[in-house]
Every structure is written in C-alpha cells, then in structure tokens.
Image (cartoon, rainbow, N blue to C red; front, top):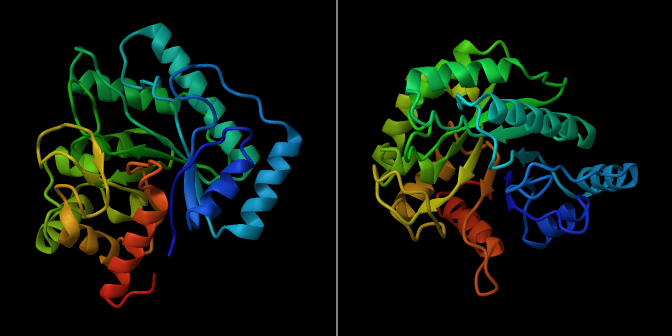
Amino acid sequence: MPIGAHVSVAGGVEHAVDRQCAIGGTCGQIFTHAPQIWAHTPISDEQVAAFRQGTQERLAGPWMIHASYLVNLGTPKPDLRRRSIHSLQQELDTAAVLGIPYVNVHAGAHTGSGADTGLQNAASALDALEVPDGVTLLIETDAGSGTKLGARFEELAFLLDASAHALGICLDTAHVLVAGYDLTTPAAVDATVDVFDDVVGLDALKTIHLNDSKHACGTHRDEHAHIGEGYIGTAGMQRIVTHPALRDLPFILETPNTDARGHADNIERVRSLRREAGISS
C-alpha cells in the first residue's frame, strides 16, 4: 500500500529516502527547507540525482512537498502575499527538479478581512503561480482555528472552481475531524466521504494526511495522536484506510515521532488494520 510519513531532509534531501525506507514507508512527505523561515536551502545537482535514483530504486512513491508554515495565500497584506507566492513558486519549481508530483499548501488565514475576501485573495494568489508540468498543487484541509480558511469543504470547492489551475486536495483526517466532520465510526466515515464527494468531488482528492486527533470533533484544535489512540479511534481509522474511495490513495503520517514510539509503529498499525479487514497491506 502507498503509506509513509513526513521525514527530515537534514544533511541533504537524498537522505529522506533512507529515512523513509528505515520506517517501512513506500511514499512520503518532506519540507525542502526549515518551515519557519522564508529562505530556501539550495539543492545541488548531485543531491537531486541521488534523490531521484534512490526514490526510483527503493520507493514506490509518491513524494509530496509541504510548503512553508509562513505561506499565507489568503492574507490581505501585500508584502506577505508577495513573499508567500514567491516561496510557493520555489516549492513548485523544486518539485519539478526532484521529480515530486505534489506540493501541499494551506489556504491561509484572512486575518480579519473576512472569509469571502480571504478566499478571493487565495484564489488570485494561486493564479499568480506557474505550476510546472508533472506537478500538482494540493490545498490541505484545515482545522479551522481563528481566521484560517479551508476547514469547510465548501471553501475548498470554491478554490478549486475559482483557480485556473487543476488543483487537488490533501485531506488531513485530524483536521477534518476537529473542523466538525465526524470520522469516529465506520458509518460516520462513509457519511463524511459522501459529503466530500458531493461538495468537492472525490476526483480532486489526491493524498491523505493520516493522523488521529488529540481533540474531539468540532473543537478546531490541531494536535495529532497515534493511529487509533485519539478521538477518531480504531474503528474510524480502520474504515478510513479500507474505504473503497480512499484505500488506494497515498497515506502520509504526521503522527508523534519520538525515540519511544515513532512512525514505524504507526505504519505497522495501519497495515495491521488493513490486514484485519482482509485488504492487502
């Protein structure tokens, strides 16, 4: 199955392949630079070649780049808008160089200008980008705290419809839960998937951030838990990873990762949930 985790690129992007293989992943996600700063880390031709070769030989893929935390497409502030577009363009260009098919970004926050204005700002910022061939820009579902956009499926649908680009969606299970969409039982998962299909369309769904949540449905509090040990729970998680519309998508973990318990444990947990349901892991 296509499953992996967000891994570090410390020491060079090519080392992400080793780290992904070490936890049993077959796909994954990276930051191309420290996500709390604007400056992008240069990647040498040798690093690009090593990353591409390692990925081709050792991983089924795909990889996804997560944009900087500083990017805010919905901002009304001209300077922040300019820097956000520039940063995201660099991520898209880097993805093309590395052969990575997806770049993932949040819609951002309207910071008091209103959701409608924020969505319009985000759509126009997206259209200021040049998306290289072979790369798809994904908008991630948000937890919806404060003035953040993208927690409601209708907001995601607006961005997909408003932008001239062929955008996709990365669905974060923890974010969807705390945004108010129930995922705690098999029936609830089925109902939420149906709502997503009605509002956004399953054809737009390209990847899943597979995270359990330390907080309950509708709380808008973004804190991830180990698979099956949060408010989504075992039954909800098992249905997510076995649902016919979801089970073949790339699952990327952003669960807690410590020396005591890390991504390898959660990847094996997901595989065991699929085996218990009679689906290949």
